[in-house]
Length: 188
Image 1 (tube, rainbow, N blue to C red):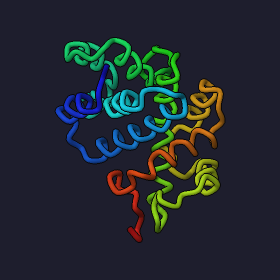
Image 2: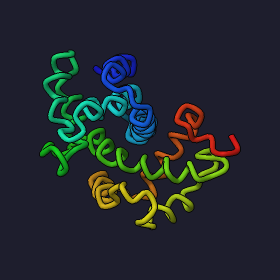
Image 3: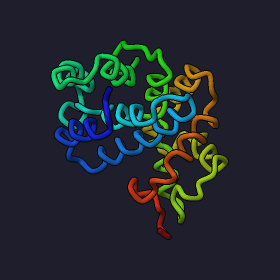
């Protein structure tokens, strides 16, 4: 089973750009919260979250096309590789998310981008970010416009949940790591 230590070893050997590493951490902590919600293995879900963009920096135009072979060769289990591939469903893979882990990764990948953008605008960062404030920004299609809201909604539907519920879980899951993920805010 993939551990956080092994995920970091693999990912950090490939990824050098700070914003991509920060995104990996955001997704990792959101996945930990989703694991807690679903009764999953927190460390395992976090490890998959951290490793999800393994080939993105090297192959941004061919994202996830170089992941399977390389990660399998590194000893990553097929189920973990499949989970990683599933986060690109309908965009760059045809691997449909089926498990709660896969559906969560598919959803939080984009969702954490909006959470991060929202928290960066606040004096207290994510530390006092309330769901109501987040949802106001989520509904504003011009805010964090590159984040695909339709994909987030689709992922939430796959999970049998609504956006506010998933966003609330992720925000609370990311709050304890505000310093590490650069979301202490301007007053921090």
